[in-house]
Amino acid sequence: MSYKVSRRQLAKIAGLSAAAMAGALEAAEAKPAAPPRNGGGFPAGFVWGTATSSYQVEGAVNEDGRGASIWDKFVRIPGKIEDGTTGDRANEHYHRYKEDIALIKELGCRAYRFSVAWPRVFPDGDGKPNPKGLDFYNRLVDELLKNGIEPWLTLYHWDLPQSLEDRFGGWRSTETCKIFGDYAAYVAEHLTDRVKNVFTLNESGRFVYFGYGIGIDAPGLTLPQAEVNQIRHNSALAHGLAVQAVRAHGGRGTRVGPAENIDACAPAIDTPENVRAAEIALREMNAGYLNVIMTGGYTDAFLKYAGPNAPKFTDAELKIISSPIDFLGLNIYAPQNYVVASDQGAGFMPLPIPKSFPHMNSDWLRVGPETIYWVPKLAAKIWKTDAIYISENGASGDDMVRPDGRIYDTDRIMYLRNYLAQLQRATSEGVPVRGYFLWSLMDNFEWVYGLNKRFGLYHVNFDTQVRTPKLSASFYRNVIANNAAGV
Ligand code: NOJ
Image 1 (cartoon, protein in one colour):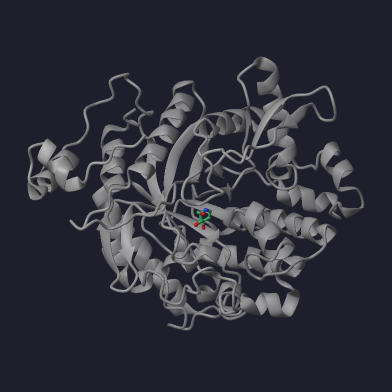
Image 2 (image 1 turned 120 degrees about the horizontal axis):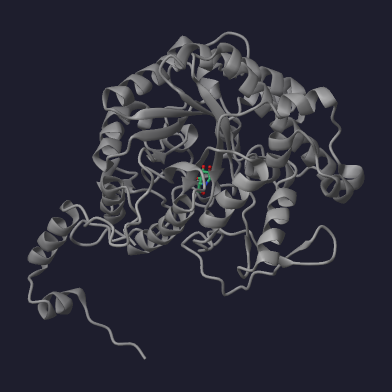
């Protein structure tokens, strides 16, 4: 049964004109929420931030000497991007960065995670740097600091210089790893007098498999599993070389770590046996990247499972890969595996996920708020880390602009409220999560989905480039102001 009331009727029932209703909403948003009733705040000094990446927001792909990236080429292959758009213009952030930094400030964020476009700084990936490219990041960093916002820099968010793909086969070659190390050294040398936190690679778990295994992301290849495993190994090696480069060339106190879309495992039902199983699952499902970074070795189960497809590696490489890091960055959106204990195999069994499992407007984005409780908790235990940052979390929505010009994204607020409540549950138990970066500051180029999937706190009209705060921007502002999830 459904009973529908139009907005106009609703306003009438509430005894308000449409204009008065909008006014009431505005007043409600402006007032910070009351302090948490359950006393459930986050630890003092918790870092609240928001995030974007270079190709997704910058645009200006042919300006000031930027070289081509694999995404510039890939988006031009017909049929690859759902809505046929490209990142050529995206959010024009290259030119509008000051305006965008003002938006970050509006939220009360103390931190901003952005990425450096490698081909802006080295148009060919290696060789002669392009000073104009670096200058953009100098301006960006200075403007952030001027506004009291800490810059958190990602070295690689998928825009590999096309030249490296052409000359060496991109991540198929360890040559690219070495060149990445040199690029990391250069960035560290020039920016870590002001940038204190550096993420190495963003989401090896995605760009390796999607880019080289199933052809969904750039460079769009479908290589055999053995090669994909070798590329994953190479990405771990590149991470390790970047850690070493930042140590050797970074300013004093520069911290460095990965930003990985950890394969998120959680117990299907909270029993001691299942929690133990989820712990084993988390290690094994992440054996190809995070676990080798954190422990310096591939697990027996991983090598056995990969069999003849296992990556080839040396002890010297494992040493580089496991160079000590300062923090663990985890991108956590959706549960990947709900597991139960098993007396078979490694000791866990992932359960099939029902088709009816609820998800947000991106169908991969299943809603499992407890994931952001279990994953950091189990990760801290198995890898003994004392600093975890949620380097990404957020949700897409349809984000319709209503006739009153506003965007009431109550679905995103629902998602964030539930995830943040679970994150607070973790920190209140002493799980060492030190900060959270909401993806994303504003709607942007969502890779294969083009401009169709909106993740922003600010709505972007891609014709006019007008940014409009969604209701979730007010929600997040209140969270930050109260240092509490507001459950
Ligand atoms: C992960 C990626 O790092 C980011 O680029 C992407 O837009 C978000 N997730 C949402 O899919």
